[in-house]
Image 1 (tube, one colour):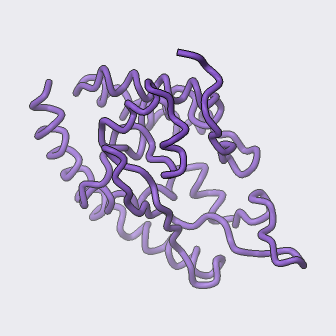
Image 2 (cartoon, rainbow, N blue to C red):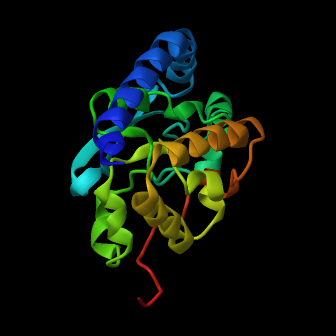
Length: 206
């Protein structure tokens, strides 16, 4: 399956990204306008993430939270900063749409382990770091098997399983499971705005 991983998968990624951008551009423009209003002219969220072979790149998402602060100048809790449009974007995973441009640049794939913060890399154990052997994705095996409702350890086990078993058949399965989960709003954790707690390292001993 080496040919699939190197050539066919990239071709499929480009095809889906270009098609998605063309078809969804009217929706994306509307969301950008609405989020610009709710977020004081800042519709996008930028953050450094770790890609294949620990390469750092900038991920782009729709900004679902405003920057409101308390009297001490500290940002309010996530759940108090999520805007109405941002909440809808999260429920339908529309905030991920700008990552189609990351796919075009080759930084991401449609299917793969989610790209995480660079500071997490030194905290991975010898098994977890294998998730960096492939291009990260918009959705992946961990996302369709619990997303943010499972522990970090379980999430990374799913990621490594994907790395070891990557194939066209598995990618197709993940794609349709993702569509089903989004339509059914499955595995969406609403606590803390749906965000995972910071990964501090694994408690499991290999």
